[in-house]
Length: 295
Image 1 (cartoon, rainbow, N blue to C red):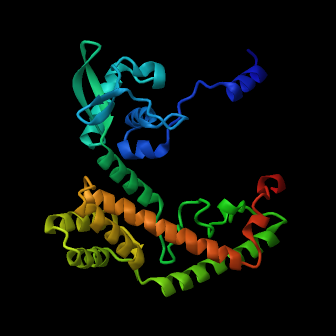
Image 2 (cartoon, rainbow, N blue to C red):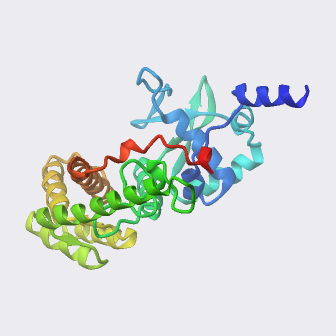
């Protein structure tokens, strides 16, 4: 194989491992993160939306794999698996039990979803620090248009097309100003630790949640430094009250954190959609401009 053949092979090969960096962050270890990513793969639905798992024990779906089986999938040796899996168990992300499989005792693995999702949200929060407009300053995604990079522009790249950068910056400023106006009209923001958990406690007591549930949830809000609007708080508690009465929530604190974030994000997206309509120079007009070609 010459170098050109190598380049073609490198582009075409499917001999890869798909690992999201956030799983490494959650595991706080590279090998454990790779293992967690592969375990997650088995718990994801297939293309038809059906589970890949076939073992159902104790009301849960389980993955059955021996410690020697992971090498073929993600190049983790048996001893590496032992160490990595123990790290994941120490963090409460996974658990294992021994059941009979084909007549023989085998290790069964499952994700502890409540702990997994809580840990995932904590890592996402580190990447998604919200300012008082509700938009993300540090994560560059389609949901946060005020960052120049995700519109195809880079603050640090200087080219002869800087006029576009100037126009876009004005549009971004308009987004921030209008977002602040909308959110102030619709909701009162609570943005400091402590103040947020107190607001939750005050409203949670009114709907009659148990004191221990309120305390655990408030502690989680402070621990994760959660930020949301009063409107998102009210809607999440309203839904939580109904679900709690019907006994359909396994762990209220984790459910509440996820739910209030979802409602908050929907509110931001709605505000963003309204703001985009009011911008004189649409950002999408420049989105496909390739700075690298001009550099």
